[in-house]
Image (cartoon, rainbow, N blue to C red):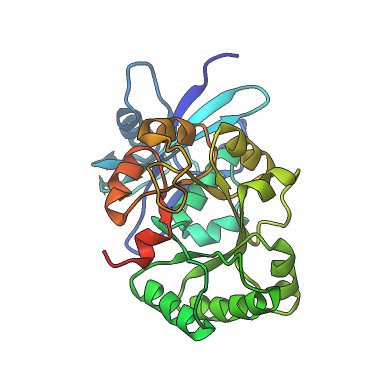
Length: 320
């Protein structure tokens, strides 16, 4: 198989937090779709250098500092690419389409209904996801105590939370999930339920409308297709290349991968370390959170390894 073509895309934002999209011209691959502006990385160029050149040619702007967001490997029938998305931290000039391409400033949440090239979709997901993904410990006290702890998580800025409860009766989980969903929605946070897709569907029919589900690895491997539409988030736990490939096949939105470091909750699990994590993360066509033995101080290491951020239980539920 030929080597993949490396392409760079720029994430430019305005003061309202909107992101710039450009429409592909007639006669080009996927003409008419909306994409993040950029282009092919030429031999000898870094991703930053290629983006600076492309955005000067396409938009007549000069860019300053950039920061990696995510790299997406993608296989088209006729070619394979790796799309490197870079946040543009500052730029000079007013973007104007130098090839008469249409431009549009739009929020990441509004991009869901936009026709976009398939590799650009995971970039939208990465823009919508936060850096931290908190996993709740098993509810051991009362529901009121659990919800109070959840409220504290949200008060400390956590906006993506997985409700993980394996040992409580389904009837209690049902009421707890509904109450937790009300709390998170009211405070601008997103709640995913661990497993229990059937329960999520029941709650959906009753108008509770959980934002999504997180699949343990054994549930992930039992599926052959995405279990619901893209109106809900779908995440998965992965531990190796095979599970990540299966997650890509069924179309998850993002995954957690680990354990990266030794962890007390799974002392028998062999940690993969940052080098192996980075290699696996680079092959995933979706955002990946690092998991296992991590604290909030590990965020920079996770980002350097290509992660969306860090996930965990103790990192967010124990005093730092």
